[in-house]
Amino acid sequence: MPLINFQKLKVPLKESDKAASNNEIKRKDRSETETDEISPLDESDADPSYVQPCEVMDRKKEEFAACHICNSLFLNTLSISEKTVRTALKKKMPSGTVEIEKRGGRQDHLQEEDKQRKDKIKAHIDRFPRMESHYCRSKSTRDYLHSDLNQKKMYEMFLAECCVPEELSASYTTYCDVLKSQNISFHNPKKDQCKICENFRKGDSEKKKELMCMYEQHNKEKYAVRKIKEQAKNNTDG
Image (cartoon, rainbow, N blue to C red):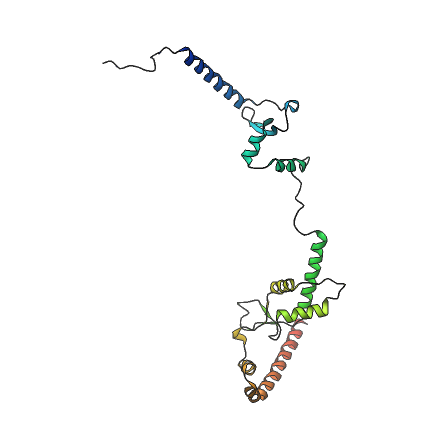
């Protein structure tokens, strides 16, 4: 049986099939024309409630061209509301960009007050003598305050000494945040703890009476050595 070349085989079409085929060809040609050519934007023919001015790429000219597109298509494609578009167009500047958002954040005068408040807290903290770790200096840059102090005591001193009614005050949280930023702690590292001081501090009344003489002599020697160290430091700086 001979092979049949279906590409060359011509089958007569009915009139309805011919009409459908011609309509499909016309529709395809019109679609290609609309894709390649973009009609210019005509504001007089545009209904703002149904169309949206937009810029699309003209493939032939390789540049953006202004045209109208369906308003619903534009909003649904971007998943935005019509109010969002109106607000963006209202805030559009001559340069083509949108003006800077003014909502949120602290106003300039409030930021200046915050800075003054933090500077006052830092000045109060600097009034307390600090001591660095003797044996841990290579591993830590933290400074230490006297073990009798804590955040609450220092904040109460700050309110009593630095905050009169007509001046700027500060909350406990703000004070603690500034204190934390200064890299300060209230206890000495274990490597720096003195056995005599620790035994006297942790001992009961009988133990403290037994260690009192040794503890007082220890403190005298401690302050004497510290004074010699300060004098040597001053002589070096001079």
